[in-house]
Amino acid sequence: GWLQLLDSSAATPNMSKIPWDSADGNGKWSKQPNLKCLAVDNTELPPPKAIILDGEPVIGTAANYIGLYRLAEGKLVNGRPCYRHAERPTHWVAYNGTSAWNAQSEASLGQSRGWMQLLDSSCHTPDVSLLSWETADGAGKWDKKPNLKCREADPSTMPPASALVLSGATEAKAQDCLGLYRLIKGYEVNGRPCWRSVRRSDRWIAFNG
Image (cartoon, rainbow, N blue to C red; front, top):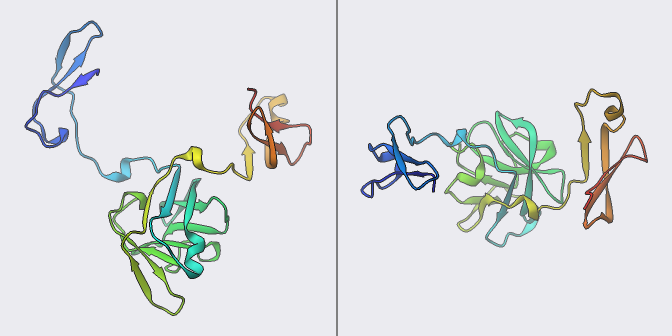
């Protein structure tokens, strides 16, 4: 490695009072008295690009909320990141602003309602919670699901986004390529998904191989 903390007595590195060492690339180590390892709040972490709700069979309407969710980039609900279902775009996971994370419809986004809930207001994103989720039975009751969890998912397992938008270019020719692009389902270029401009049929986003 390039950094080391020579303190086997510390249960975690942030608990050590000993300075760290840094490697010079030639086999030597030097003390770095100002280099620290500190514990921080999980709000310092960037939200995961994808999460998955799974772990236990769910029946009824709540079953439609099981699966992969994609981070809604740049969008906050009640001050926290939110996630849209990869296959059902009107299904979301969002914080309700008071007490819980909810798996809910787009019409209820950010409200204290939904078909699943995680009663943990302390977590900035639901994947870091150690608590289990509950599911609604449709009659006003909640069923505890001890094995139903939310965890970070590998973004590469996500289906391709159905739409993309290119924005921000100032050069004239680049501006011709800006705007919305629609996924061409069932069609790949060099083994990867591709998108066609909604505004101009001769503009594509594709992998060059």
